[in-house]
Image (cartoon, rainbow, N blue to C red; front, side, top):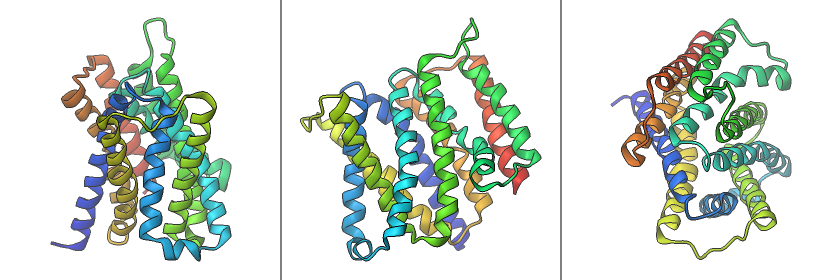
Length: 283
């Protein structure tokens, strides 16, 4: 099997895992507060990555760790909006709204990197916006509370992607990733202590969910992504990752029994089309 095909299959496996995280997180949130769950998830992920790359991280330049901390702030904001929003919206909707980050990235790059978005980004935004309206707007044309909160995570994740693009060429991937995970773990713990009553006396189901998300959905996924992208193109990677909302919908239907109406499904299709148009046209 060619290395590129192996890399694409590895990235597809990562995308499937990320698609499953929405329904897994939503089920866990029925038993645990959002920031407590994030603190456990990213705390475990940080410990795992720290144990694997301890020697390299001890010798990591401070500027790279500082850059990872800044990027981690946007990563924390993204997961905070997404996880809190999942309490009030469906896993399927959350997956598609989160996917809007792909379309927002070119415009975030304009603000941060002074890179002008192309016509593909413009077309993608129009399609994705129409799809978002069909998916989330209610009969009185207002946006549901959970959908509005989740929309914030798309902007935060877009900024995280842009800042990774800014710092990654000058930083080791392990240092940048570990600093991000540690930042999310610390920020989540601080928020849990401030607004929740955190406890480690969690059910076996919640611990299992947190462990799966920490090991497979965070630490392993990021390592596999870093390794796989050495042997495949950015275009392949972007197109494969655009399938994440589709897998989120699939798992929501199979595991949680969620259902979307015809209008909402049309909205999902338009949003997915917007993501693909933005990526393909840009490439």
